[in-house]
Length: 225
Image 1 (cartoon, rainbow, N blue to C red):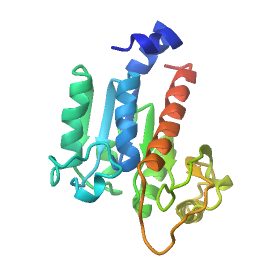
Image 2: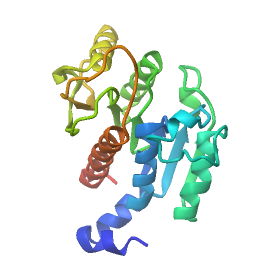
Image 3: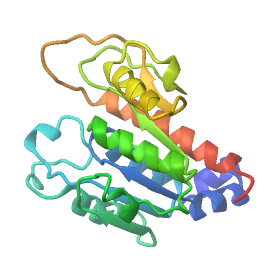
């Protein structure tokens, strides 16, 4: 299944990827593509958290959404899809809205990485605080909406972001909590629309690809596992 990846990185590194454990919090536009990319890259221990159902408006950009599963819970549909890709997957799903109270129940302290792909700013803050406090690697997705030109995403510290309202708000709230450093994925591309919220598929897809490559390479760089 993963022979073409093994040709590039070798058996030892592929085994390291397989043994790694990653949680994706939010499996919408960005998080959904990340979940699938992780499985197709070889990660075999994955936790997915989301409370939402699939809506017809998701079809334009979310990999799990089709005309046949509207109204079904995203994590349940991902469970079927990802196990179809790799039946040996150790997959844990939580159909719930992430909150301060729920975070300790779903975030295992042994995780190699937590990927924050949620839009709820207070929830993002609580998730980041928990991971920082417990020394769990975390990366957060910033805004991907209201743009349609060629996307250019990068990984940087949140203190260095610009042209991103979500990052600006999050940076201020984290600073109030004493957190000044956080790896995030964002784009400097200015928004094309300011009076409504919209999205085209290649923006969350490109953001997801950038985050997934970052996480995989950080896992391979970790000499302790």
